[in-house]
Image (cartoon, rainbow, N blue to C red; front, side, top):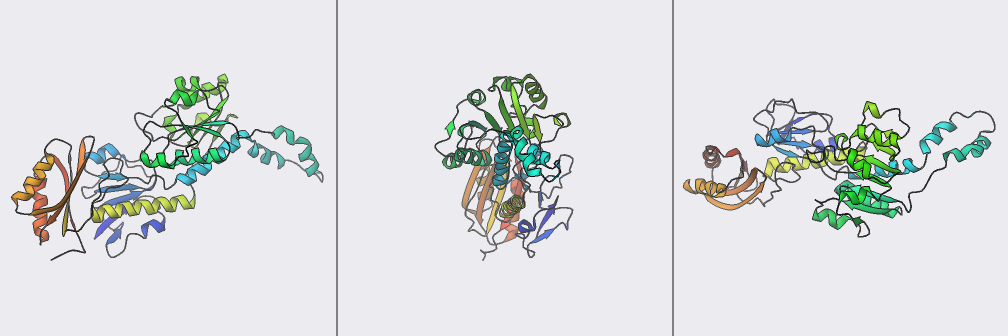
Length: 394
């Protein structure tokens, strides 16, 4: 029986994937896994029983990832599950930035009298706007969201330039060949009428768009931030708006100093706030967490490498260890010294840590547990788990 602890309300379509015969939800103070949305865990004391955290969303800045890594806790996210919701909001915001739709709708509510239609026609010129077609959009970050925005903006008739030095092969295949790829960030900033940011918040991207970058932007350009608040320096944005260098700023992250400014549109973090996105994120988070608990498979982790291997043996040993030379040799030797055969083995490293799956051929769970206990004696091994294959046995 696996125990799952939830923070926040997780869509039932996701939680239903944890079958009641094998999972108990919020019934133990020592859970095996945690699934959450926006709850901040930086002050949470993780029980030693926790082996994984699944965040139903793309960002993981509310999870102490570094701390989790040191404790051998795998952190998962759900990239792409809410991509369509964010994409649609960005496209809507682009349209709102060139057409004063909101202002017109608010103004017309002030009209009275039998000649409302005539008043509207007579005064509509004050709400004349521009079109997106033919304008140039720069997309910084070509992950799941950025790629979708680039493709759809092109379909709207915009010229699109994308910048992402780390674009994945999968994403590269999904981006229209008509989207131009910039080699430098400056190529986007200096030439685009609109710039939208879609990168994760990390030490490297914090303050990525600041005073120096805003100074390079095309005069009269508009900036959009639906990624994370800390990526854009809000004070620098306000200064650029006041100086006329920047024509407008739209953000999904509330900051008091941004309010009550005619050139700034602040939204209450609506990016992934659709029923469809919440369901998709919950499903992906639950599926990822379940596969890890039952098979040891890692996919869509932010702190450990992707590791998958078909599970045909009676028992599987999962190992999180320091990424140092000869660890595989030590693991293999330890298992061989106990007269147990290794059926299959895979290892992947990521920065200072590595993850190993070892399928062993033994007929008793006690023997598998003995292997795990022996491996745990190695000071360079962080965590060891034993998983029994329910479909295989003697």
